[in-house]
Amino acid sequence: MYFCYTRGVSALVFGALLFLGAAQAQAHALYAAHSWQGTVALVQFAYAGGEVPTYAKVEVYSPADAKVEFQNGRTDAQGRFAFMPDAAGQWRIIMADNMGHRVEHTVEVAADQGSPQISGQNGGKSAAAASPGVGGFSVPLRIVLGLSLLANLALGAVLLRRSQKQG
Image 1 (cartoon, rainbow, N blue to C red):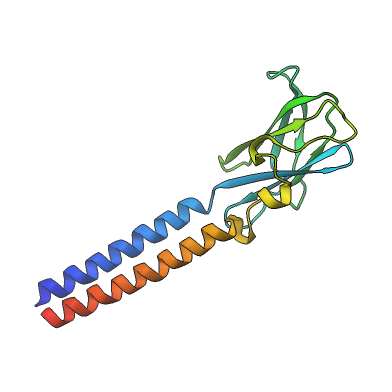
Image 2 (cartoon, rainbow, N blue to C red; image 1 turned 180 degrees about the vertical axis):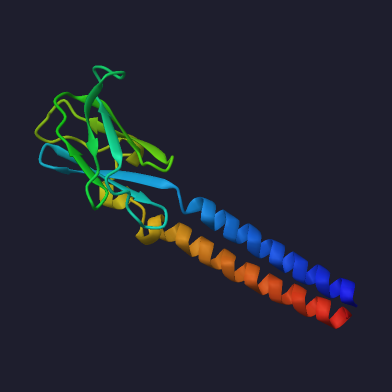
């Protein structure tokens, strides 16, 4: 009786630890999305948990020279960085905070500088459509994660009741 109870509780605790560990690992993922303010590219950075990397180091590389920085600087207090590209092509932006996190984002600049086209990692969508939702996850992913959490809680309750009935 005692063995069945402890085994069920152990399974429940182990499952909770796995879930919490996965959530903790995902909390440090970085996201980047860009938008245009005239001819200025504005890149917004955020962690999966919704926090923003304040004053993180940013490097911008032009399509003409992928090894020499076109511009460097830091994000502002809201996790944003702006730059004004001077040539068409694929621009590479690298953001690294002081905690070992790093994200690389591309911005495609059209030959017509007056109306740059947004593409790159966003797949041609606008920055608002491609950026993560509240908390860093898109709405469909948040729904799936919520349903998964409910299913895991229900399974834990069933296993706990089963172990209590056997004991």
